[in-house]
Length: 241
View 1 (spheres, rainbow, N blue to C red):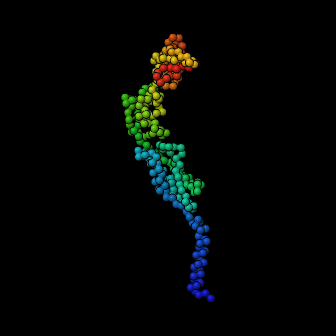
View 2: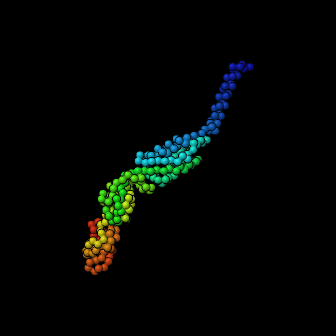
View 3: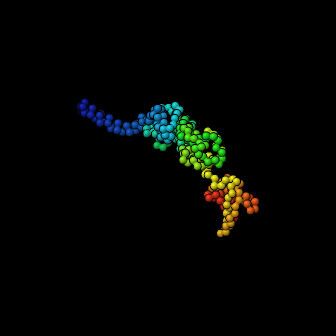
């Protein structure tokens, strides 16, 4: 007959065996992942800051709750859509996933104001007028939504001409500009007519402003006829038959 100490030892061994069998199955039932709302908001703020730089004001709506998932190892990521630069009002998705499966998505309103030194029209700049320090000035402004940083780089703006009329006080961007005209309306220009290997040179008057490669109408001096050709970089007009 077993003594008390022997029975106690056997019970301890049996308990260890039972725990070894049960615990691997029981552990997933008690595993969970917890996220604090302030930690998520801080991570989102830092992520946006890395995207927009220090010249920005960032406001994040306080709609992110603290969350607990029964699954272990849940992660989250931020979905910025197709935006490469957040400006103005945006919606950022916070997605919580487990093993690649989406468990929950929270949409967070975000307001970002980015301030940059930009080129501004001193007065209305007419179509075809060249951009210079006489008609523009550098000011610190909030970057409008949907304007990329590459569009406001001053060195890319000077010596270009206005594609349209630019209203006084407007921020000047590359979308509003074009290369200087190769030909200006009213100028006398050389016209080169190409027909196979044969070329004929004549002269006429430009009826339009035109950049290099653009179509331009010419009134020929000899016949007074109006023809259309392509403006070349050197200021002549090429007509091909």
